[in-house]
Image 1 (cartoon, rainbow, N blue to C red):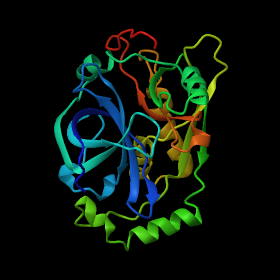
Image 2 (cartoon, rainbow, N blue to C red; image 1 turned 90 degrees about the vertical axis):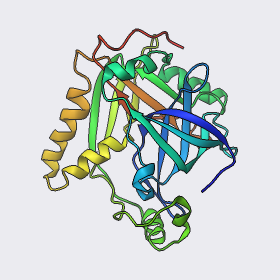
Image 3 (cartoon, one colour; image 1 turned 60 degrees about the vertical axis):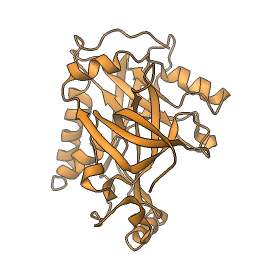
Length: 275
């Protein structure tokens, strides 16, 4: 899939869980910091049929990649770009928090209150942002309802389509299955007077963890998820933030979900300015 776009270098911070797509097999919303410009800024890359890509085009969170991108004009969110997945080159991986900090600490944080307020007023307002969690009030781990009949139909259609060859695919991945659990946080952001927010976790890391433990009982799986996504990520020694993003549909622009979590030790995470 070649596109006539521009070259970009992006530090990947977000890979959302795959969602069924009849056209692309299944798609992943990817986001990160564009770091080849004067000041780093957010970009969203969509669609990315990640599981269908050749191994040489695949990447993990905190990889720095080069690729061709083009503004996704049908999406009024200014951060949204269409990636040329065949142009992806992985440059390096930032393995330690100390390697990631110099990039992340240049980024001004925001609040969920502000993101929602601005999106209500303007559909072209920021649709991605890093939000410090002032207080984790609670969380809910509920059973995932599974794919809807419409989503099942998309998956079935994708397994038979030849359009996926456009992405350089030579073999089909395993049939996409839903996670067994969904995680929702209740938290307070850093805006004065924040009434608290609910944020559904859409991070692929959450789905991948469940897939690795697919043989466990549901009760044991809850313990495994809670241990990593609640106890470990919100340890007192960490400064924990959410990568927040909203939806393309205009009616949902003011609804923000948790796309990923940034949880470095407090000594690594410097105090970056709000807004």
